[in-house]
Image (tube, rainbow, N blue to C red; front, top):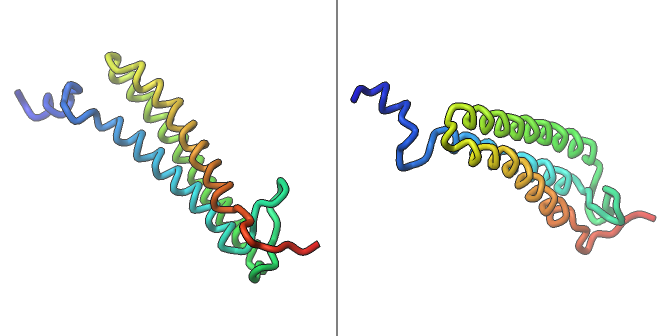
Length: 134
């Protein structure tokens, strides 16, 4: 069997290269989303009573920088989620025998990222012992 046939064989034991790309994009999207949340928390912002507020516990004069970094990282995360979705759809078309798997992956990766980032929002931006100006 020639080398080109070996590379195109989708029956390999370790899974397909498409699976790794979809999952890697999803993991990177989660990390970018969590890093965006962390940047908000590091600049003195906390989630309190349904709104993002500046704390008086430490200097929050850099809150604007935190918003900018967070927005940039969330755009990167959204792009990575779109990449994961498109890669899953491409692999579903290329590998008809694993079509259901890749279609499920196309839905589960973005949903999983949303859940991880939502949990991270409440864990990383919890007010804890922070105080707020009246």
